[in-house]
Amino acid sequence: MANYLVTGGAGFIGSHLANALLANGHAVTVLDDLSTGHRHNLPLRARLVVGDIQDAPLVGRLMEEADGCFHLAAIASVQRSVEDWAGTHRVNLTGTINILDAARARRVPVVYASSAATYGEQVQFPIRETAPRAPTTAYGADKLGCELHAAVAGGFGVPTAGLRFFNVYGPRQDPKSPYSGVISIFADRLARGLPITIFGDGNQVRDFVYVSDVVRHLVEAMRIASPQAPVFNVCTGKPTSIQALAGTLRDLLGAPADIQWADARPGDIRASLGCPKAATAALGVAATVSIEDGLRTLLDETRETRRAA
Image 1 (cartoon, rainbow, N blue to C red):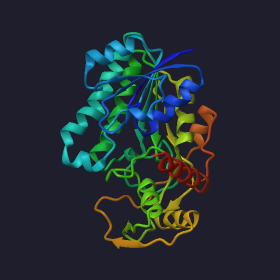
Image 2 (image 1 turned 180 degrees about the vertical axis):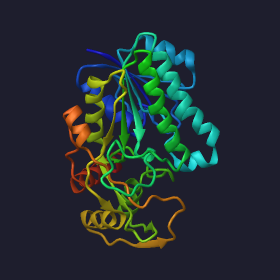
Image 3 (image 1 turned 90 degrees about the horizontal axis):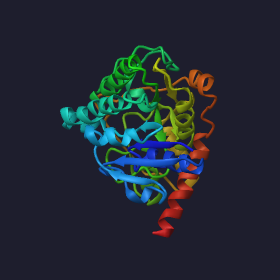
Image 4 (image 1 turned 30 degrees about the horizontal axis):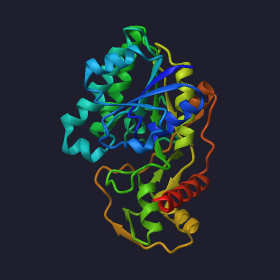
């Protein structure tokens, strides 16, 4: 049994990871400031420490107890990074440096969340890990910075592995947040008979990956973390347009979709489609949940949650 520190563990992906680690017999300490995460996402057996990854002394104390760290805490909103560039930078990059710095005392392995946002706008698909990194947002730039600092940490003997998440979806994404993923927003609004808004022509392509597949990648990445600081895509390699997504949700719900169209948003990337081959070869896992099955599970769990409420 290992003792794992999970930063951002009360959030969407982090809470699913905490559940999986506990189910595998490990002990879990969650560090979360609860700015977007929720206590009710966590199982009772998880130890919750309410705090900030910018608090270096706190991070250092928690790392002293850890056999490994999964670093997921971040401000993932591109809009927030526009409105508070310096503030999001302090969380997303300085906070990561705090994690890596604390890890080097005992060379604690760190698996951290990077992002497909590091790639920016690409012209060749699917996107491989060797593609040029050209982030177009402060969020993407900070995530690229995390990868560079992980390589620096490797020089201190800290084993790391970075995972470039593409468009992750599943239960516990908050549809009420304007910064939430398109799937959670669409699913919530269609289930309540409300219209949805598609920006642009709806032919933008995304690589949607279900949260349970992401968790499997995270768990296996801990096994291969090394001072060479490897980085892998977490994706399906299968494209889904925004318009097709709306149609699939409509069919699963058996309800008409009232679609409202709006101008394309400035800076919205036209296509994002990853190549999963390197991750599959190194980690021995692949994303296996189809978009239809993932959406069906999400809708079923959403209905159960509403009934319980």
